[in-house]
Length: 299
Image (cartoon, rainbow, N blue to C red; front, top):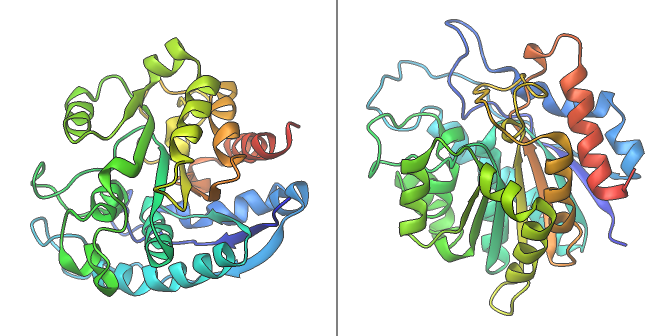
């Protein structure tokens, strides 16, 4: 059994403010899951906190590229250093975000070590880039595009390592069926996508098992799993910035997550987007913690 090491990455640098004069509350995700005793329940080890720079968009305006780019460019290598250390030690790195831009830290860490795949469980494709949108700005909706080398150089070519991941090494799950144009673009690039309805048709456990097998190939040194809480239906997970309807139910997510993170070639998991500010009773945070623990432990 590998040691599970929990690393806090409480960055909200990649999201737009929920209201003027406010900041996204997803930086409290790690604290909420810890309050639900995720460390103790997993028998995990402490990996510490990688403290992000201050959220400050300054005088940024639409058309200026990714906001907080300098802060993201500084934070990503720091987070990568921590993740790389534990992956090299043979640990399973469990990173508690944060918004989805923290996934760049994992992508950069793994790029330093070799060639790794990505299984992304997300309601949206996070593939916005200058080639398909004129609304570039929030890296939390662009991290997959950035990780595969699409976008501004100061984020896509850190340490001269563009791309951090290859298109053919990425798999996406849980995208809402309504996002037809997004799915079409990914499939044209030969990036496998499984929508919510397809997961239900084929069975999440079977899809995940087949995916893990496809990523356990000789061309890859391993793979990483990215979990965005908004993949869940808003009836059970309303505490996200974009609560789109018709998402996965809790048992479906656990069935999808379990075969992936239990693969001997999976080196880590990051959890993102859950916002405790939108969950005053704490029920969504308890559910998210329970689902992750169940995927690791069957309990």
